[in-house]
Image (tube, rainbow, N blue to C red; front, top):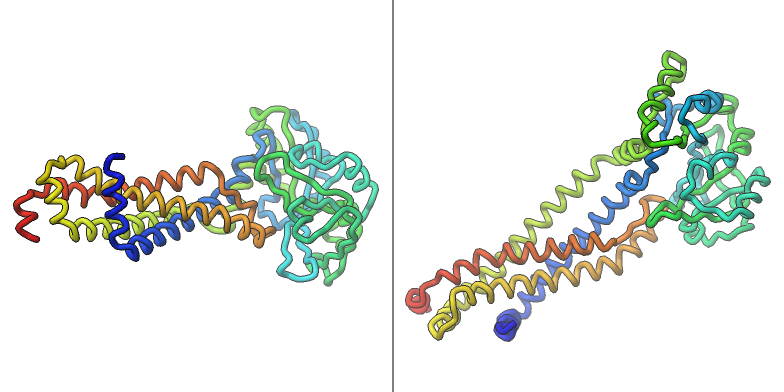
Length: 383
């Protein structure tokens, strides 16, 4: 702290260079935070997946269906507590850009299996009685300004000629898990089954089942796949976390992409800040030599240079993360339905600050060591 005056005086010696360096740092930290938030959003489904849940899909792939009759057969397997089924709906509301996830659900068993989705009992009761009823996530309801009682038309061309399906908003669900999905739209299976072509009737897109214990997962998964082996519609059963991870991979290797960009950002910061500090030290070799001549120790010189570098990185990091805190919620709001909820968590902020300080320490270390080892006579002779 006793060198604070000298450190700040040297920082503001070249104001334009300081502003540009801090600005570069802030932009890089904003990019770092945004990438970390996107990675966290994509991996959140894997992290919050129920350990006591399995997903059963057609062995060929998710786009192939399974008979609805599989439900009762799977329930006979010891260890299975409850089971529900889903279908992808894939309709469009008003315009194709208004994308949001729509699932055909089994209202009789949905809440027994997916307990994290919370719907008031009265709303759920109305939904079950209304063949054209729908339950919508809180984020999607807010996005379109929907409220309970609204009548919503959704166009769908996946199941025959383009048709407008009419729905009544009977309820709004919330997710009790922090950052959980609140962007889905649910419609009733019976309404769906009545209006699809014959080839799609009495089918399920996939099954989700709840186990008595997570320890039963491997045994039950093998039992299900063995039960339907060599049938016309074989199954692939896996844990919910494995299913979520596989779904994310359909978007590409997000983790590798983000890691690559993050590495480039890190080394770019290192080069920018290191170059700034090297130039700064070179410009004031004479001043540093005078300080050493009047009694400043080598360690003091090193600490001063490191202090300047850390101050630049800290200011730039805080500015970039503060900007991320303001902008990421706005970006997340515009991408509702396309990306999971974007949350700038405290862990991302801590990691960003730690990265900034690490870059500051490394970039100031080499110029600082050079200044520390500088001999007074040689330095003054170069002035």
